[in-house]
Image (tube, rainbow, N blue to C red; front, side, top):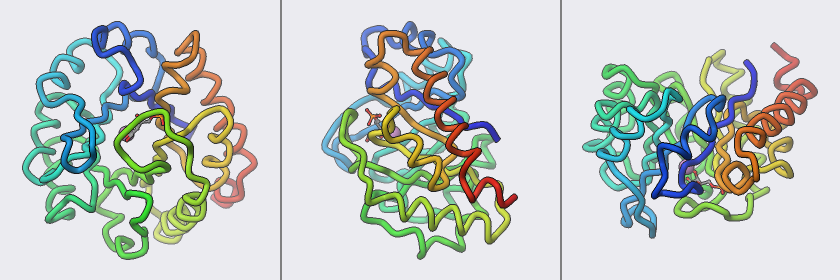
Length: 228
Ligand SMILES: O=C(CO)[C@@H](O)[C@H](O)COP(=O)(O)O
Ligand SMILES: [Co+2]
């Protein structure tokens, strides 16, 4: 699979969301960070804005819920038009039930891990998911520095995906840029969220193409991708 680049609308101008979504047409997904000021110390947008964005763009929406009680709210984001919904395992009461509900409603189900949350306790849950998100910054804000210490977790997760023969996508989010994306791809990521690296660029669509080319080149050389 070619590397997928998901620009994060968090780094866009919130007064011009429809135009900002159009500025990255050609991206694989549009990443929408939902923050509730409880799970993380920041507040962004909710269901009505996702509904409007879904109408405004043909790019599928990848909703990253950084909220308490995702068991209650995540299904509403599917109804609002999200094609992929990510909940944080640290916040979910019943991650398996929630993943099944998201899938049953017709979206891809994805689970996120904060930097301090290990993957190993969740190995048995992986077949229930369409994507796993490894945070490469503490969630809450765009523009933070990439945490290199997450690379071993990306590698170990890729090994688990290979071991179980899963089709699961492995997403990284936080500090992904031209200077860090190759390390992420080499370690095993195949879906890349980029906020400031895309919306901070003079030409966001060109930034998406550049990141994708870098990730594809690094993946082609990576041992995890050559093995199968
Ligand atoms: O979920 C988050 C932050 O919590 C991200 O999606 C950020 O929006 C990524 O922004 P950059 O680190 O790429 O600037
Ligand atoms: Co995010």
